[in-house]
Image (tube, rainbow, N blue to C red; front, top):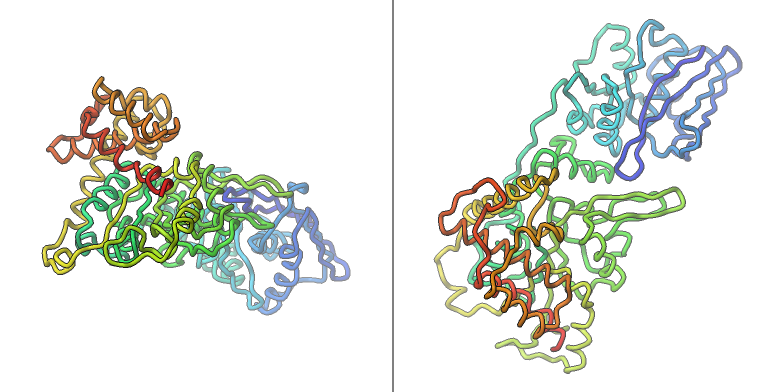
Length: 532
């Protein structure tokens, strides 16, 4: 008998459907899988038959041939096990012939005991199946929370724990109760994870710079000696960023799902990710790669923060590999098997010492580096890389009065309120300008037309920019980034002065000379440090 069922697989973070055709005829026992299966798929026949036997299900002796279509696309992973099993059961009559499986999609791995194990990329495959018109999607019970995001609009998600449960469902003995609506995202209290800004002593300039960076989605570099609080401030940035939108939460979860980093209990990620990889990591681990391309740290930081501590210590090729993803918000990896594009819309936060020993220019510690060593250390940051960092701020050591002060600074909640209002201002401008992706944009993502429209300068501002351009020998990219930062500073000042979020192209205040001057000052470090 011939039966047809459907499953899904993942390439990159995108799912594609797999049609499973099963031919089963009475003969000596045999089991063959064709259709470009990888080793994990080929081994599914041993997992399936052992799981069936250990579950007490009796199948007749049959010659089974399974074809995975499209046959010219390589199938990888163990998520096809459940779909192949369903096709085998339908062909053998274990699933009643009258049951229509044309709108059902099966995703899951089998264990020898008959248990259905969780798989990577369940959310991606469930969303792909739902978009393809499948209304009944069966996933491992341990993947149910994340896969439930595909529910709704007539799509039902079923959590399957074992082979016996699947058979009972299709024989109407004990139907599985489906999830029919997507779950709410679970919001995390980021302050419990990363701490609060009120815990930071002094560093008013750095706090101001970080608020501007968060409000506009700008990349930032913190430079200072050991113990000045660079890492402490960086790790609290997620506490002042706006909450994830539902669309952002789904995109973020898809990346983490294919990497196998989803908590089965929470499912959809409800907070902006914060990734802090060690500087010894390889380029492939940072940007993604491998024989089977997988997301790297920059994609795992999608819609969140990528913190690179000891920035000059990262490998040169890894550091330079960041340049294209910063500009494009995506990273494309090409292998023999094909081309994969991963999202990488992250906020880059870097921290570094001013020299190898860390005390160049320090008021307390004595620098042991020679002038040549300082220059060599700073030269690890290339001009093109520095051009892509919007804000560069120096953090001096704290004095005793600052350290011993008992006055708390502004809390993360207070700063976050201003940041969210500033983000809403920018979204209103983008919406009025007809940008369809306005909800996902920030000032740092303004294109050339946006800059021309929203960053208009008067004669006084233009004069400041002209002098800065000549004195600092700025590139065209650095010039545009200064304008983007000035736009964000104007928005924050507008909010701080009591301005309300308005609708239209004129949302927010106009860019004044003080905004341009502050934006320039927050960029001057790239020339200062390069020249030693």
